[in-house]
Image (cartoon, rainbow, N blue to C red):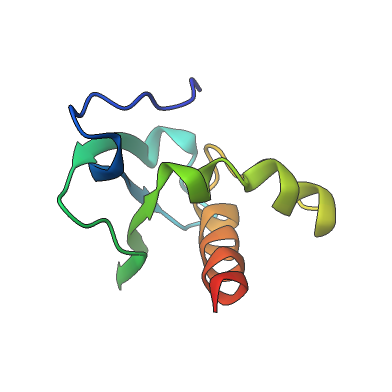
Length: 95
């Protein structure tokens, strides 16, 4: 998976949007990642059954290697479960 690039005129508006499914029967094909231009990107996660939706800044996303190292976790990219754990870790760390 490629690292997301910011297409926004104002880099402060870059917001990573991830939609994925957290199920043992589902693989990485249920992992959609795109960058949207949003005036104020806030950390947000929602859940509907096995489906999750995440919003986070690219700055936060860039910390995934730090999370993987500190938590001795598998790769966040492509894994809905690890993205969920990373999002919680990054949100807790920001508070």
